[in-house]
Length: 501
Image (cartoon, rainbow, N blue to C red; front, side, top):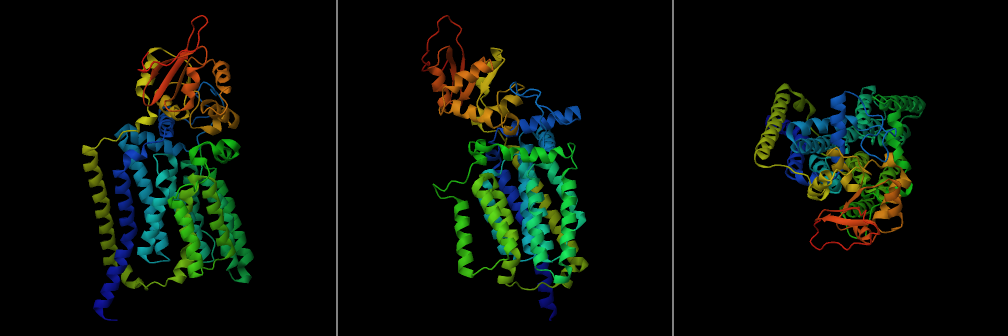
């Protein structure tokens, strides 16, 4: 091999080492620029509020103290660490803090994803898969705990698949990842569930004489992962709390992120599914039974709940990495050239430059841009009026719960669906969306409601306009307020066309 050719291989190897960092930096800058669009879920408000409570009290919540309908009911936070991180960043940098954390979470996930894929396929293809994963996940990239757990999910599944590809047992040193995941977000149960089918992939292709031993090592690792998932302030209750949301039945079809995928209009997810099917037929992709099961399971999850599309987007390529690597042969890298000490220093210097450029860009952008939460979930003027009237019990819209909690106002309902239970939340939606309007007056009387705060363009306010004993006192483009009309023999009061008291 000539000296110039060897040097070229070494340079190429160093460039490959920087590809994941470059991809992560690009993802970070993109979502930093789109930061305001990441602040559009009212759950972010109560996530930050709980994180601040944990910091202030140096304790973990074990009961609800934010609602008046479930006050004192046992409840635990399965995302406490993420909530603390969001609260700390918000206290330091206002809304820029959660935006930066969200962008960092996506960036780390992309960098880890490209790095893991790069071990099997060419870097350009790995970056292309990362771009597709971001496109599919963009609707769910929000300033919420699941984004901080995303890089842990990618690393966990990627490392397990790498062990299965090597036909070996996973390392015990990976168990802290599960403990971290369990403290960041309740989605860690997916990581536990996938250990089984991934272990079958390793055992199926192992030599016959060592299959039993390998299987037992995977079983022991699975037990270790289960124990690691309980290494939280709540212990084994973390596992119980994380799975409670799955038992909400009909309610899951009413909350957007838990709804099934809708193909009434063309979506990137639909395109990805069709592309996956077409590629399998066109290239004759042959997979083992465990890999087929993993892909079918991840596809089923994404079809059942739209929030699982991000798991489909990031994990399916990791499952397919080795078969794709065997299908598309890659140019061999000169490992000796890449491992020489000058190459390591050049790579480290390049990484520092990428990090420095990212931080400089962040500082410059924050200097002239102020991040703000979407107005549709922040009925500021309406809540100001309710505070002036010293209203005690407010029947609030589901999406206003988080904002009311941030204002220290007890709520009727908020995004913690597992706290309120299936029947309570289903009745609430049916009452306010006009599916069972007769439920509305019953709920108002049962919980001794003083005022209602509902979405302006929802059926609920129109129902209240016709309900005896209630009158509209405020309306804007975001929210409508009704209060009890204590006038003797009060009749239905038509709304003021100006929307003012």
